Length: 106
Image (cartoon, rainbow, N blue to C red; front, side, top):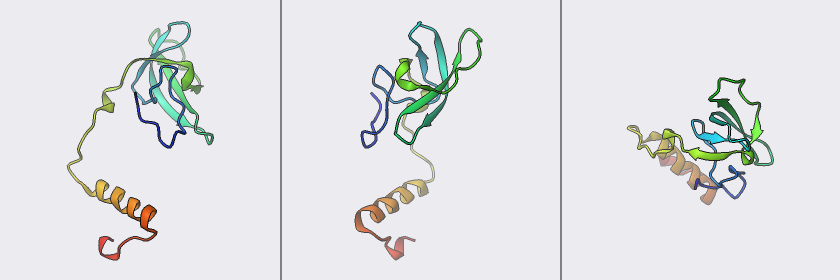
């Protein structure tokens, strides 16, 4: 099951959080690939699906209306070659928990 961030995300009907590239099906068993994920202000996630039968891509539809068939390859964890992004995350966490950044980290 995918992570829930602050309990605000609305996952697929099967419980996983949507990611582009996921393979899903709708209530009529029509399979397709998630092309876009959008999060509304209320935390509900909607997806656009490209259908296998070549039909028109779905409009943004609540993710809870789909069932995950297989997960996207992009869900695998990757360690970046450049750890600067991790340093930025650590700095953000310090700001959240301690209120201000440490000047030597800037």
